[in-house]
Image (cartoon, rainbow, N blue to C red; front, top):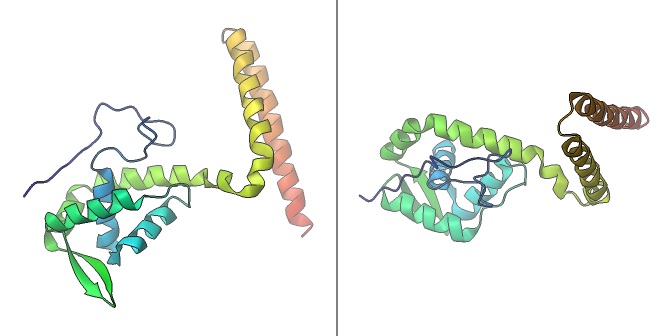
Length: 182
């Protein structure tokens, strides 16, 4: 049995858990994530893709070109069985698959934690967010540039932090006020 296991050792992860390559999953992680989903509940390819996307609150969408070959690998490794159910090829976990999931429980928890963090940013995909994303990014750029030009002067850093915290409080107040007027 040819088992490929990538753990992404030596790769730096970004704030959202990505590997810096523009991809969320390090080598081998999509395999273990799909296997974990199958262990939770059997599913066909598209359903597993949808459940994976749901874990990310829509902020990540797996491609069929990545998912289907990985499902084939999982089946080849006899970690899941594919059965036809109502015309769909549904994957069911095997005992070997359960053991594989159990062997990677910490890795799976880390993947789902990263998915939660990425999902928190999923709201940026909302069309209404487009109205404020550019001004917000300009604000962040100005804050960073101010600190860089001040060479990290603690007084400047604290003042910039205060400006940003004040803006955050103002936005929370708008949100609170809006909620009370519904």
